Amino acid sequence: MALALFDFDGTITKQDSGFHFILYSVGWFKLFFYGIWLLPFFILRFCQILTDQKIKELVFSLFFKGWEIEKLQKFGDNFGINKIPLLVRKSAIERIDWHKKRGDIITVVSASSEIWLQKWCNSMEIGLIASKMEVSEGKITGKLIGKNCKREEKVSRIKEKYDISKFDEIYAYGDSIGDKEMLAIASNKFYRYFKD
Image (cartoon, rainbow, N blue to C red; front, top):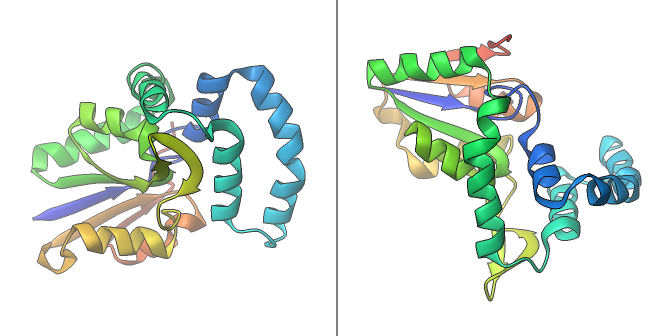
């Protein structure tokens, strides 16, 4: 029995799905306006003064705080159906199909939000481990539930969902330092494997 773990952004997709989801949800004007405002914070992140989690929560707060979860989830579902298929790599889908034919358990493990990934994963009949937006009284707070699903957190969340000792093989696919720890637990590691 084998487990296949796929990072999403930059691995399955050619571009960052979060950027495209925000654009899809709020439009170019708001994205551009807040993007300029956020620039100093991204510089602080580059200098390792702010964490990825702080940046992500700041972005989610700016764009989505106060949105009703039903409204945002509708955007997420529509994005998953109509936009994600335009971002994915053909070679990555072929590899997912290869794992399906083998009968492997396949799971996307992503720092992106399940809000816009879940519908696409459901349509592909594969599992999902992703960052989760906090909801209070039916509205988005801008915070994450727990940690950003990146680096060590990816491995922690994988081990919460699966007893990895039961798998004969573990395949892992990633494209960045955020996938380093996930790749380390795999018996078959593929870094920047998909080129199209």
